[in-house]
Length: 303
Ligand SMILES: [Mn+2]
Image (cartoon, rainbow, N blue to C red; front, side):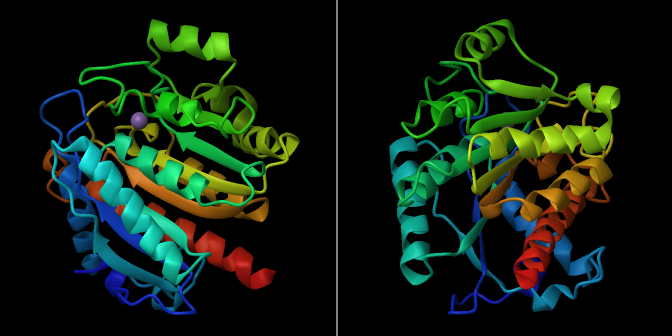
């Protein structure tokens, strides 16, 4: 089953290229298995209705689902290479394709962001927005420098990434070494509780103006499903209370394409083996992905 039954062939009309990275090796705890998520999230779309909340017909979205990157779980270097080659192949067919990635654990985002960034002629107007309950800023964790808990740090290490074009939103489970790194490097994070204090509208405005002030025009968006509240997204390794509601994240995502070109986004850390029998978390993931594609499409059609 493809995501919402989208076709598989990239052509000149294709806007979104969806693919999965079924890789969950660099997670630090036993139990959750996000390598199951790409197929599971595709499968649940079979039972979802074919319009978005704003009334768009989903089959009209110009998307293709080209399958999964081939992963050998323990062969980190090979996987990094496979992911890079996979994306380069997409860009060869369609230079302006918007990538839509279904993870996998959060580390999957690193080779994606790096390949997207490396492919850009202009690296100065490129920003990265991460929704996450964690900062993922450890220098090293568990298996070394490559881990789902070091992903933000590895992105920050990229030569074209700095504290003016990387923003972490929804944080609420921050460890002391991470906070020290964030403070020392002045890496900006808008913690989850802030939404309660200033309201969703101002919270969203802060995200927009962070990137606007830095002259960012193109955004990559990484959504760790644990940014959402575990009451609505229980199937993930680290269930931290106090996260976004579905509607809050939906509204933030709705606003982003009004200000920036989204060049790619991912949704990671869904562990279907921990989900409720009604697939609550996979449904939510599928909805967020298709709704965000619709917001981007609506904006592009207006241009
Ligand atoms: Mn994460």
